[in-house]
Length: 423
Image 1 (cartoon, rainbow, N blue to C red):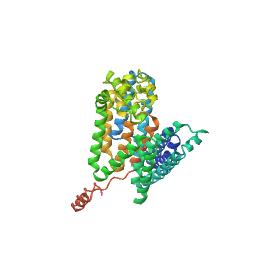
Image 2 (image 1 turned 120 degrees about the horizontal axis):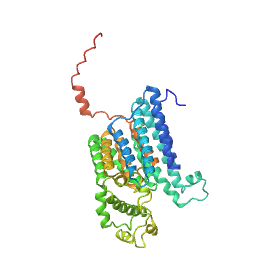
Image 3 (image 1 turned 135 degrees about the vertical axis):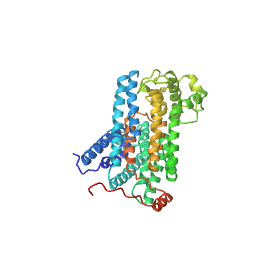
C-alpha cells in the first residue's frame, strides 16, 4: 500500500534500480515495470499534493495526439481493432509518462538527487550482469529460462537490454557522486555496451556522447541543432533512402542483419509510395500485403547479395517481419504525412525542452535506436523511453554561465512590489 509520505520520485527510482537487470534477463519485463512505476509515481503525487499531475506542455499533448491520430487511422488499417487497441494503449502509456514526469519535476531536490543516485546503482548492476552473461556464453539467461543447452540465438536477447542501458547511461553523469566515480561507471559501462552484441546500441552510445558533450559546452545551440536534425530526418527519410536503395547499395560485406534491413527498407519505401498521404494505418507493418514474401532475385542482385559471401537465409527472409526497423519509415508507412508532421514537431520541441546535457544525450541515444532497430510501438521500448523522460525531470537546471551570473549580480535589485491593502 502506497503511503502519503512517499516521494513521487521513489517508484521511478525503484524502476531504474531493477530495470537494467530485469531487462538483461527478459526485456519484455520493462513494460510492466514502467507501467507500475509511472502509475505509483502519479498516485504518490496525488496523495502528497491533493491534486493529479495532469500532463502539461505542448510536447506532452503532441505525443498523446500522435496516438489519437493513430486511432483515427484504424478506419483504414488492415487490422482495425489491433490499430485501435495499440493507439489507445500506447496513448494512455504516454499520458502516464507525461504525468509522472511532471510529478518528478515537482518533487523535492533531495528526492530527485536520490533518484539519480539509485539509477546509477541500477545501471551498474545491470551492466555488470550483462557483461557476466556475455562472458559466460549466455549461461545466466539460459539458466533463468531453464535451458540445459544454450541455443545460439540466445545471444541476440542482449540487444534490447543494451539499447535500454545505452539510453539510460547518461543519467550517471548527473548523479550526486564524486566525479571520478561517475567517470568510472560511465567508462566501464560504455566498454561493456560496446562489447555486447548489437550495432545500434553502440551507435546510440556514440550519439549520446556527442550530444552530451555538445550540451555541456553549448546547451542551447546543441538542443536547437539536435531538434532540427531529428525533425528533418523524420520528414525526409523516405525521400533520401528511396533513390539510394533504388540504385542499389553494395551489401555483401556488411553483417547479414544490416543487409536484411536494406531489403526491408526497400520494400517499405515501395509500400509508402502506394499510400503516400494518409499511410496504411496503425500497426499495418504486421499485416501489409506482401510482408511475408521473400526478396526477389532482382532485389538481391541490386544489393550484391547473390554471391557465396552472402548469408543464404537472406533469400528466404521475410520482407517485413513485424516492423521496418526504422522509426521514421514506420511513421510514414503507417501514419502518413499527418503522423510524420506531428512526430517531427514533437522531436524538435523535445530537444528544445531539454534543460540539461544529460537529457540531450538520452534523446540522441534514443533517437538513434528508434531509427535503426526496434519497432516504434514495442511496449518494452516505449516503457524504457518513458522511464527516461521521467528520470530527465529529476535533472537539475544548469546554472547560469559565469558572465550571465556576474551580470545578474551587478544589476540593481528590482523594486519590491507594493504591499497589498491591509498589510
